[in-house]
Length: 131
Figure 1 (cartoon, rainbow, N blue to C red):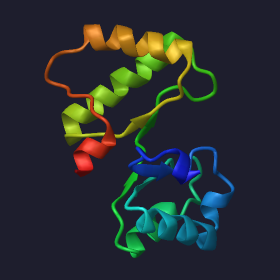
Figure 2 (cartoon, rainbow, N blue to C red):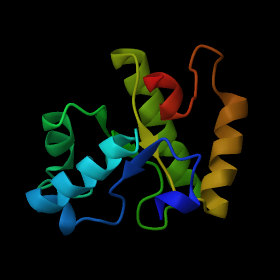
Figure 3 (spheres, helix red, strand yellow):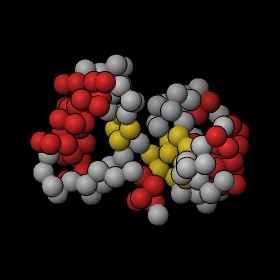
Figure 4 (tube, helix red, strand yellow):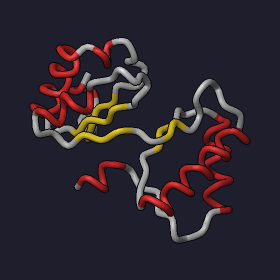
């Protein structure tokens, strides 16, 4: 799969809830990421996930998701609420990592939020923060 995405800069265990608790699987994924110069992003879809610790144990750049913007087929309003909450966290903590699916409601919310928010919050791909 990685060969078909040469522009990839990292891997995420999104939808990998069950396997994310299996240390052996997480180590194998982290080793593959390391071999390809990729960072690891733990979606934290499960409280039992060990992906972040497995990647860090190998010395990899590893991050954890703070917000899933459109869980459970969220409406545009629900995504906007999550974006507002993420923005409050950014103002308090300096940065957060939010992920989302490519859904019409999510894209609509992102477009609306982008025009309504202040200029003091920067939205950027994670790979730019790491580089």
